[in-house]
Image: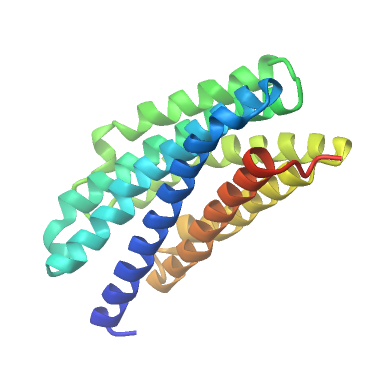
Length: 231
């Protein structure tokens, strides 16, 4: 794939994704007032989670699309790098908020493990601000990419497992599929973390990863805001 074609493909995909995820967030917000009292907290935290995701991705994929339109991401490495930092922060907060979605959906109380996951997220945010990450460069240190993504992987997969287990017990189809989409996103993301420095084409796995998040949001919107898939 030529650089020009790759850039054009990424621009179209990124703009389409941002349009769809912001549309979904807006529709959640508009429909929140229609939720029953028992669904208000679940709906509110679900809205907050995907608002954070949309906000961070506007900085990440939005800045990448903008850089491509201006002549290439190499010329605007600082803009692209700090866009990546923005989405790294918000996706960490996304999983902290999703822990509260799980809590109120399944009427759970937090224990030591759940507070550990929150602390892990806060630790990751601290790591993200360390200068060793070199966000202003497109060639960020491989070891620091691993260091900052280990807490996120533990955090995200743990939240997905909690959600999947309780969704199976209660036959909650909505949150079963949301957890599956999170698993799919990590199946795509982990090879990128590990091997993108060896073969940049592996970075294409970010496309299905992004689609998985979009589908998770749509499933949540349909299940919580439009109709109940819970029997």
